[in-house]
Length: 501
Ligand code: UDP
Image (cartoon, rainbow, N blue to C red; front, side):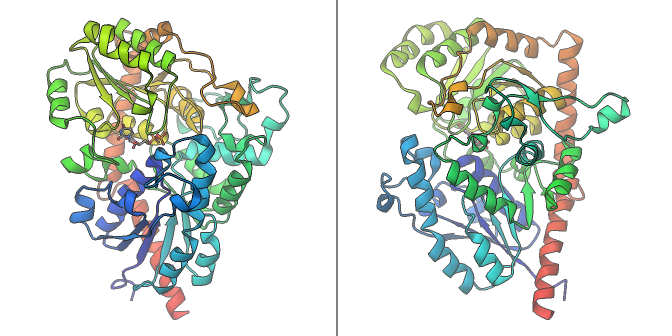
């Protein structure tokens, strides 16, 4: 009975690009392992998937309408990246809550019935329907094992509650010794952090604290955790995470490697706002390993003065760079500067992308030699999967933790030196941290890109090694491939037990 049974996986991605994109990749991976896959999302999000996944692969899309206007959001606002202001974030969460009834109805009546629900972070209330239908509910939070483990330990030991100021460093508690440290008989690393660098859900004074609590309960009560990572990258953290949470942990990534298809790669998450051929053509004219790719993810915004300062820094490095800037960073002076003197001085040197960049396509190009990143987990892993070392400039969320993993644990990046906005812990506006000066940018670029010294060479070799391991992990018989198989086995078994007692 085990063999001809095809389990039905229901995927419900959280509607933010950093969650949605990897979930679609997971849908693709599952479908390649011959199971039924249904992705449930909203019309606006479905329409962003124009690539092969919706045409060629056996993934079924079910669309539920999203009550944007009913909850005070602008029409068509169905993804966190289009919520116009912070004041409306709660409305977005409330709108998502209104999906409960139609979703439960779908799950009760679906044919074939669901075997497993893999849910993004915004749906803690799926707990009860999963219980009612007796199906495993797994969460996908979009974090690394490292930051998931840190978050778990911090919630348990609460060291941040005993420090006197948001900028006072304290030890990240109860982390494993890595294999590399064991082999080299090194002391376990002491990783320090400050309260201002922690994800906002540790901030009790946050206006969203009640929502964070709800979300956390949803995650704590889940039956297992799916992680976009791979065993060879952070094995000790994956193991400790499973032990600490007493949950199964399946690392199935890097999911960005799930497709080599040109469309999948170039139109991941959105249609690019530039002509991809132009971009490839520009890259083709550059020296291998010489280009810096600069991006702050799908939502990261810098103040206009900071954008300008970064521009000066990049220019001063005298290296070619691709600079992705969100259109919402607009200010009249900035526009004038960009179109005027900046453009004149950097003609041919700077490939500017306003809006959405074909990130994975760019990172894969041999001309790219460094990635200045905000350390969103997807971007970080996409850099690793492309064998590109990183310059880290975290802004918030899990990004300071990822920076620690990249710089201190894995040794594949250098810090730019961005400080967390201390004010944000006291309810201030995001981005009120100290300005990153152009000299800091230049220094980080030089340390990373001038491969002359031993340190730089080793860093580059390490990330290349990880790239190879990442690619192997996704191949037939690789660790992530096997984990996906184990996951499917776990779900099938549950199905069989449910049917036959
Ligand atoms: N991304 C992209 N083009 C852009 C900005 C982002 O393709 O212009 C993709 C990027 O490749 C990654 C995701 O969007 O897959 C962003 O996720 P990440 O976790 O890096 O950051 P977040 O946007 O969640 O802060």
